[in-house]
Image 1: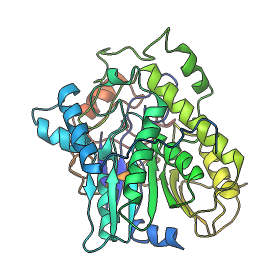
Image 2: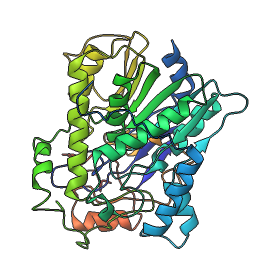
Image 3: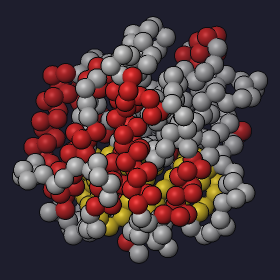
Length: 391
C-alpha cells in the first residue's frame, strides 16, 4: 500500500478491485486530521442472527493474545524475512495508559485486514487515558486460504468474549470498528446497553455492489471470485490479504445484512463517531449518511464527511464536511481506508514500506507505480486519469 502524509494528515493508495468490489477487497486514499483528541470526550457526553451470550468463561486477553500469536506462527504464509515483526503487526495488542484507565476501547478490523489497522488510532486513545485492545478475527493474519471455511459467528464470538473481558477491568467500554468490523461492533452494541458508544471508520453497513447478496450462494461452486496466484498481484502483504475466497465476502455480506436489520429495528441512542469519504468505492456512502441522520440520534454524535455533501443532506452541526481534492499533494479523491494511519506509521506512513499499485490502471502505469515513480492517489478507477498514473 502506498501512503503519504501531509502535515498531520494521511492518505493511502488503492488496492486492486475484486469482481464485486466489496469492502476490504479494495481501499483508497482518505485524509483525516487528528480528531482523536476530542473523540472520546465527545462520546462521553436486536437482530435474531446475533449469537447468544456464551456460558463459557471469557478468555483473558493475554491468554487470547498468546494463543493467537502461536496460531499465526504455525499457519502464516510470511511475506518477509522478519517473521517476528509480522507476528507483531498482525497479532492482537494492548495499549495501556498512564495511570488508572478511565475506560476501555476494543477495536475490530475489517475483512482481509489485521490488528495493524488500528495501530495508530489505539495509541492516540491510550494517550487520552483509555485501555485499548485490538483483536484478530478468525481466518485473518495467516493466509487467505484460511478464509475458505470461516463463519460470521466466529467473528462475533471474539468480539463478545473480549468485550466482556474488557468490561471487567474498566468502568466503561467503547467499541470501535473499521468497515466490516463496524458491523460487528454495531451488532453487539444493540444488545448491550452497557456499551458507552461507538467509533466507526468507513462502516460497511451496505456495499455499493448489487451482487453482494449472491456470495453466500455461489461459494460452493466458485470458491474464489478472483483466481488465486494469478500472477497479477500478490495474495497478501505483511498486514492484509490482497485476494479473498468467496466465503470471506459471504460472511461480510451476512454482517452487513445484520447491521441493516439492526438499524431498521430502532434508533441507537448512544454517542457515535463516524468518519467516511464521499467517493469510497466499496460502500454505499449515502446509506451511511442517511442512517447517521435518522438512526444515530444522540446529539453528541458526529460524522466527518470527506467530499461534497449531497444537497438533500440535512444541514446539521452533527456533520462536518471537508474537501477531498488536494492537488498540491496529488490527491484526486479520498477513499476507503487511509484515515486509520498516521504520518509516522512505518508501513503506511510518509516513509512507509508498503505500496499498492493495482488501482484499475493500465499495465504500463502499474509498472511506473511499482518503480516508485510519482503517482496521484484516489479511490478505485477515478474517471479522469489524464493527469498522471494513479495508485
